[in-house]
Image (cartoon, rainbow over all chains, first blue to last red):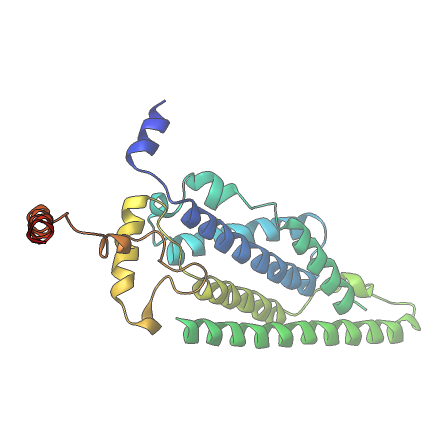
Length: 109
Length: 143
């Protein structure tokens, strides 16, 4: 109920919400394939590789927080925890695995 | 912003390519030397378990950091989701010159801004209408 009243007083712009989600997911998929390429180049296997992905996504979130959201998360995201920190964390996991295995196979002949 | 981000991206891609090629060469070299060593009975390690030299690791990690920063800086700006904040920014955006608009590209600031208020109709001129009607009546009565 409180949420509804809050939304009635401070309405949201759906286009802006969509735009932000699109920007974030673009960054996430790009950076996931980049992290996969580096993980394959470094020759990481099994758990270290997954840990590297987690580390990379956390760093990406931090960079978004610093450079794009400028520390003011409430202004750009409706649910900051879901949209920025946790949201797409595993959405682009498959592109990470793709480039990871690709680069691993290319580098280790 | 775009020049900075493309510089970062270019530098990162070059570093990453160099690191990947170096890793490839290293694996090739170590596999060939270990194959040569295999003739002798005292072989140390299989090619897959030889670790990369630290400079390639450092180069790859550095290129990751540079590319991540470049990607994030080069991304389009986020937009405020609250209507009040968004409308304020969009209104300011309409006054900026054409090349410097913040929301240019997909959608732009039009549609959501309050520009339609500028060219709406004013109040109805009651006195003018009354006078026109009186003129019309007088004209018809005089005929």
